[in-house]
Amino acid sequence: MGSDGRPIDEQQRYKPQVFVFFHRDLREEPVVPGELRVVHRDERIVVLDKPAFLSTVPRGNHVLQSLVVRAREMLDLPDLTTMHRLDRVTSGLVLCTTGTEHRAAYQSMFAAGTVRKTYRALAPYRPELETPTTVRNHIASIPRTGLAQVVPGAPVNAETLVELEERRGDLAVYRLSPRTGRTHQLRLHLRDLGAPIVDDPLYPVDRHVDIDDFSEPLQLLAAELAFTDPVDGSARHYLSERTLPLPPA
Image (tube, rainbow, N blue to C red; front, side):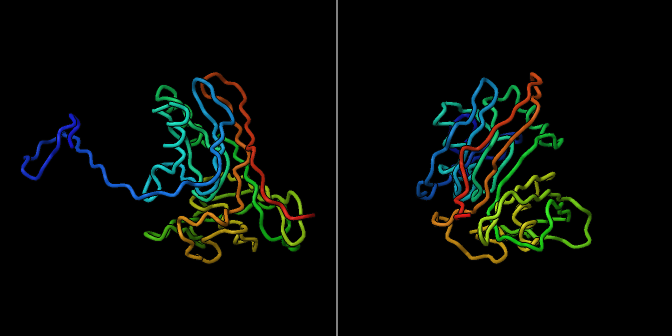
């Protein structure tokens, strides 16, 4: 249909600068388990704590079961927009703006790399791995696969500081501080250190997990967000209320 709400059919002649809207039929989406929690809300921003398997934005097979759609309805904020994204299978903090007025200011923080993001991951303990260590390499998406890969010899475009937080038997909690935000960056960097994240459906091997299988969430948590507010200059620091399911020490 056109922007005036009237249907458009094959008999209508082409007109330049006309917006056409296509509304596709949505599949029946199973409800993603877990609560979408509000960590902070004010007149400009909302910080949400999302469960694993909830898509950040509506796309593809996940429209109604997305953070944006759920939050807009839950908070009655029709213009709510995310300032960054998490992988669908990652849980934790997402910063959103409530409207359009300050959207560019908050987006510019992520573009400039001034937001401090900290993740925690549960992965195999590697006694030979000396931490802290910084992983630097080049990551590129593999077209039409949903996967990414490390490209040896290419210019560095991905960097992560990896620290050992605690050991739990054969597993460990790693603290990850990305300096960049490439697709699947943290998952690839831990994999390349010999410590792939527990219950990762894609790395080191694509297990072809059904998109509606919620039984084994990726053990990766976006645990902290910190930044200087671009509007009022205040220091902002937020912590996820979620935890990783740790085995006995």
